[in-house]
Image (cartoon, rainbow, N blue to C red; front, top):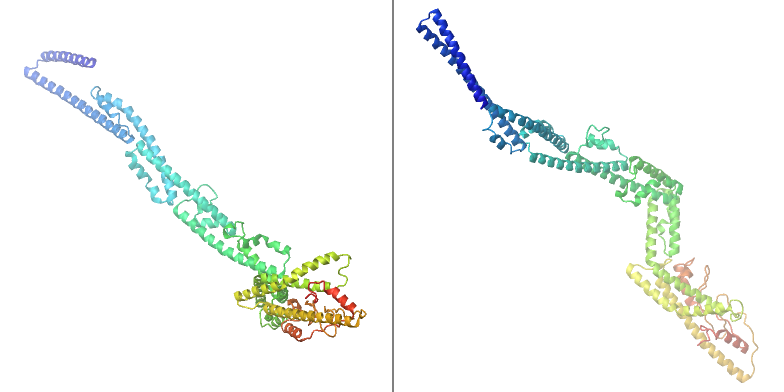
Length: 608
């Protein structure tokens, strides 16, 4: 109201001034003597000029109003645009409410600070978006391999995104950034794992690590921090391929080194290499006992290591060639010792004489002969393992025969019942020996059965020092049976002699004087006899290195110098040679003495 009153007062003041001026002008006209027509014309011109000025001022005011309206509309549109871009929708209603109560300049003045504030918020929000976009683009570039189109499209994408600067969009960018950061972290860990594996493999193989990873990407072995580690798919694929390549190389070198070390061990064992020389290669010897994945020692599979071991194998191979004949002879001797222990006939094709002749003639390689001997040794060991049960039974049988031999010698001792030192020990041994001797027939029968089963399973004969064991056992049983029959005939004949002596004593009433026969005992184990009859020898084996045709034969009887044909000759001689009995005196004293010596023994010829 104050402004309207001021305008009216100014209007009235203007009218008063105009009237005063008009009166002064009319006064001047009267003094000049202007005509009424001229006065009217001049008044009309003055009125037109005033009207023109008013019209111009009104137009200027209208234009100013239009400009203000346009400015207000533009700033309101900007506010609306900023609010929409920032996601702030509650200020438009406040602006509409103030339209009716404020002038255009007041409205413009009221909205301007809001626009400035919104512009600042927009700049801050765009900076946030720009930072997020820069990080997203950088990580995306690292993941995709620094693609150029991402860098070129960064500005345009930011310009397009200016219309949506809401918090929702900002959260989307932040979520996307966190996803990319996690993926980058996972990829970086994967790359580092691959790089560590490559480093380990390069260390084992003795390969330059930096050169190897630089073949995949230079950033994997950087010397500064200007370039970040490349984590793209191509880098991961390249590292995986490099690892597979290194593993393949490791597998090849491992097998090569393992073969070389195995050859080295073989040469060491063949040539009896001292421990001091072996320790120089102790670092690689454990390879033959390890798996490929457990090999982690740096440089263990390097080309230099393999070359060193190969050079040592080559040197030992040359030395081996010069000493091959000695090795062949040594292994042949070991083969013969093994055959002697296991009572198996060795292969005569590799005998010491033949092997030496073949090596000297150059017809056969020493390594081939050595390989044949090694095969024969392994074959003998395998066969000895399958014969072990039967050989144990043979040892028990031979031990029983030894006890039988001892008992026979013990029975011929006239002082065996004396109270001398060790007499009671021998008596106990004699009792145990009789129990053992009684088991010999069953032991022989079981041994024959076991041997026949072995022969049926292996489809070959069981040879003991070149002679079939079954034949040995059958001949032993036959010889033992024959001597048992001879013993029985002697006992029957002795009974008749005793009866005849008794009748002569009753008729003549006299007794012949006792006289000891000079052939009462023989070294070979025979017992006494007289001219009218005979007494069979006690079955016993000959001692080592001697042959007695009248004794029972066991494998040890012919295992020395009498083998194969010699053994069968002994058996035939035993069957064809008549038993030689020592004459027994007819005197009662001799009969009494003889009876007292033998009648107390379980195996005595007098025990009917």
